[in-house]
Image 1 (cartoon, one colour):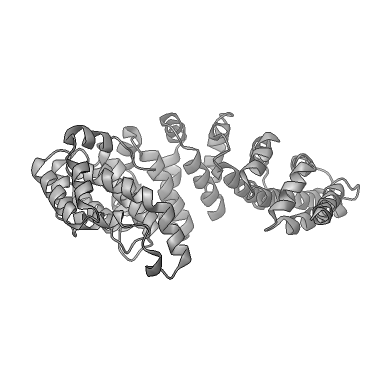
Image 2: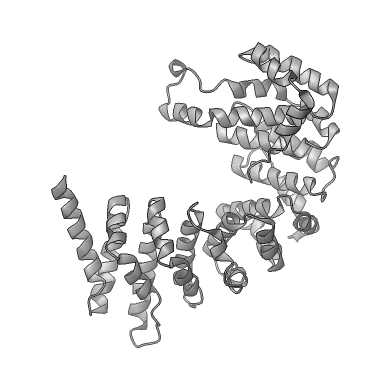
Length: 412
């Protein structure tokens, strides 16, 4: 194994050395070969980082392209970004190494280049770096010119729309971030993307709006008055709840409407909430859905109806919701009943999240009306796999327990 490691390291050194060759054409070929070498090879990625490939790639990335070798150098920079994008798909340590090498300022600087293909490559890499939990999201907001420039790039192509909205969604972690994006025209710039021909673009725009609207009255009140191709934004969201559309789109549109409702922009008795959003979220709780979808559905439904007794009453009699929740406690399933190993692994990972989501929904259902609470308790204990234990949990210090569970917020 020592020989193998030595061989990999020697190969990696060869790739790095070629980055310093005086012949631009050979540098370009070296970058292309390096890109091919790191795809699917995490060890090669780590070796190249250790051997100092990143600073040299960043140097090449930031070179001025005004000389007679413009096209050649442009190709070199472009391929460097593609390589960096591949490297950034590695482990968290790899990404931390890239961030420590100041990759983010270098890529942001690349966005001022007029070459669209180069811009898209920079954005793709930035998206991948910012998605990582080890990347400080505040790096996006350090330079006040970055957000407005990203807004200006949104209309350049479907790829810029896809990557930039993903960056915004992952880097919007606080009310301050929401305000910055709002003040720089996020709503006006992103709203037209909801009717894009590209499903990916529509979906990323929808996710971005769900993050912007979460517990934000200013954003929600603005969204409710926005027109997209002649339709109110809420009507666009409602159309995305249709059963024949992908589940992630239905669920995210329901979250947008839920957050707008909780922020006071949509009344709780509005038809789009009572007849569309609530039934959609109840559907997400059925056992036909994937476990993570059921968790998100239950948490979002709990959040939607938490302050409103009438929504709680409607939900308690909609599509056997209470019986559905009993199924949340039946995971992981018995091994003998599962033929799909991946599905079993999925069940094991999500079992605790399912139980937590179910308790949040039980708490929201029974928090304000004693009759509903008795109904929930009675029906649930009949179908729960461990009725005595479950009943004792629901009956112990009811008000404080239910308030504690209700205080848990859904994931955005």
